[in-house]
Amino acid sequence: MSEAITPAISDRICQHMNQDHGSAIALYAQVYGNAPETETAIMESIDPQGMNISAQIAGEAIPVRVEFDHSLKDAEDAHHTLVAMIKQARTV
Image (cartoon, rainbow, N blue to C red):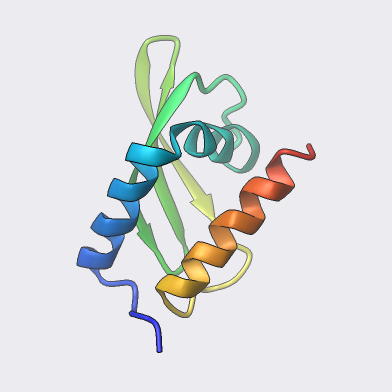
């Protein structure tokens, strides 16, 4: 059984994404967050309904909310959903 998305799990996911997948976070903001001009981005938090991103646009940090297409059940669902979203975003 995978872990529920608690604040500690959110922090862990965000730390991993920010360290290893920065370009993916920017793409989430561009494609799903209606912020196509995003240059770089960091994931601030993730919860079952979506993720909060800080997008750098023209030198300014802009908050972007990306809603998921379903409520995440747990951390494993978060992983699978984020992977599926990036694969889909790359085809746009």
